[in-house]
Image (tube, rainbow, N blue to C red; front, side, top):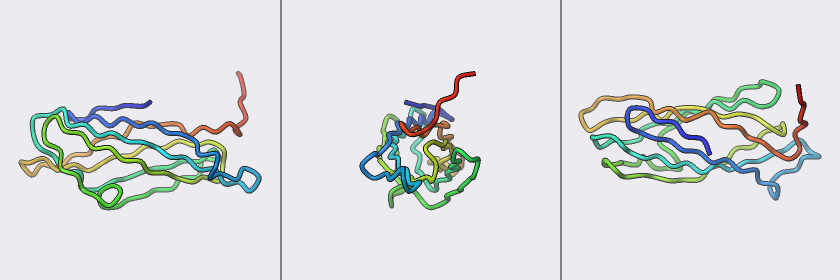
Length: 130
């Protein structure tokens, strides 16, 4: 599990490889990731937008931006949390993801809650020891 806290908002991510949806012989690898967003701050916040930076094993970068997550823009009172599961395909057997959620506090202030960088690993990646 990977976790990061920004201004009282803790984002925890747990990725997992989906072998049943992947086709390694065709260069198609799929991961799901479960996200928990917790409001440990003192103000109510709303998740407005998301930004993902997905990098495959060859260094190719894909950026994804959009409103909310899984079709929602959750409002989190202090102590509340929101969880969802999503996924991503890659053409390589490993990669890395990171990003931010743009949050808006009840006083109108906006800030980016950082999503921790997390590794997308499959049993098909080659391991090299230095």
